[in-house]
Image (cartoon, rainbow, N blue to C red; front, side):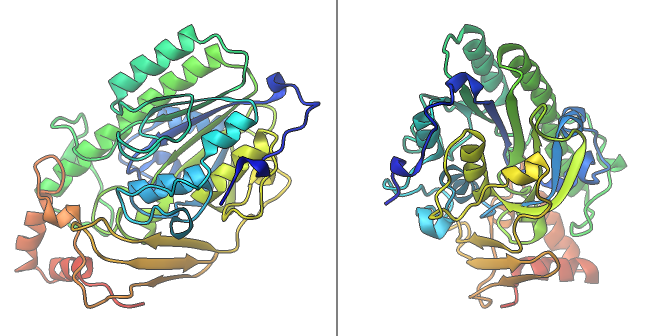
Amino acid sequence: MLTIAWVSQSVAEPPQDKPDIVVYLADDLSAADLSLYGGTNIETPAISQLADDGMTFNRAFVASPSCAPSRAALLTGLMPARNGAEQNHSYPRKDVLRLPQVLNELGYQTVAFGKVAHSRSAPDYHFHTFDRKQNIPDVRKNVKAFLETRNDPRPLALFVGVSNPHVPWPSESTIDPEAMSLPSQLLDTPRTRVQRSRYLQEVKDLDAYLGELRGLTTHHLSANTVFVFSSDHGAQFPFGKWTLYDEGIQVPLIVSWPGMITKDSRTDAMVSWVDLLPTLIDIAGGTVPESLDGRSFAKVLRGTANLHRDRIFTTHSGDKKMNVYLSRSIRSGRYKLIYNPHPEFAFTTHIDLLLRETSGDYFKEWIEKAKTDEHAAKVVASHHGRPEY
C-alpha cells in the first residue's frame, strides 16, 4: 500500500516559495494535428505561444490509449496494471495514493475543474474542490469565478480538463472539409473530411480557451507558476485512440516555468504520463519514492539533462463490449514492438460499432469503398485484423 509517508517537505521552505501549478488537459487530441507538431490544417496560436514560453516534448507518450487508465496513470504515477485502472471506465484501487493527496501534504490547495479524472461519477481523488462539468463554457465560468474569489495563502495546484475534442463533435465547423489534408492512414471520403473538420474545430476551441486560461492564471497567480498542457491520448479515428500506434499514444506535452525553463526549447527526451506525478512532486519540493513507475523529468525541464527514459511501456486492456482487444507495446528511441495476444479476434471499437452522425458515421463509407477499391480494402482489413507482433 502506498501512503503519504513517502512524501517529505523541508520545514525551512515557506509555502509561498513553492510554485503555483496549472495543468490543462485536452481529451482525445493527437499531437500530429497541432501546428507545433507539424499539423498543417489549423493554427493553434495559444498552444504555440505556450511553446514559445517554455519547453515542447517531441516524444511524450501516455500509459494507455483510453481515458480512464490514462488519467489514472497520471494521477497515481503507476502503470494501469499496478494502480488497478486497466480497462476504460475503471478506477484506481482505493489503497493507491493520488496526486492531490501528495500535494495536499506538501501544503498546496488542490482544485480540479472539468475532465481531470475520468467520469463524472469517479471516486474521490482528494482534491479540495472538484467540479466535474466538462464543456468549455462551464469550465470557463467556474474557473474564472474560483480564481476571482479565491483568498487562500497556500500555493495553488489547479487542474483543468475540457472534453474537447472528444466525440460527439459539433455539427458546425469553420474549417472547409475540402481544403484539408488527411492523415495518410485515413481513407479519403466525404464524411471522413466532414468529421475531421468538426474534430479540428474542437481543437481550435480548446486552443482558444488555453489562451483565456493563461491570461487568468497570469493575472491571479504568482509569477512563479508552472503551466503544463497535454492530452490523455490520440484522436478517435482509426489507428488512433484505442490502439498502440503512435497516433493513439503520442501526445502533446508543453511546460512553461518562468526563469526555470528555457523559452522556446524542444527536447527529444522520452517521457511517459506516469512521469508527470513524480515531476510535480519534485517541483513542489517533495521526495519521489522509488516505488512509483514514474520518474521525475524535472532535470530535463531545468536543462540539466537531455535524456530521460530509454524505453516506454504502453498497455491497452479494452473497453468492455465495445473493445475487448488486449495489446501491449514497448519502444526505445529507435524501435517499437506491439504485441497483440489474440490476433484471431476482430478488432472493433466505438469507431466502427457506433456509426453516429456526430462521430463515426464515415466508417460506413469506408466499408462501401472497400468493396471496389483495393487500397480501401487493405485499410479496412488492417483496422479489423491485427497481427500478433
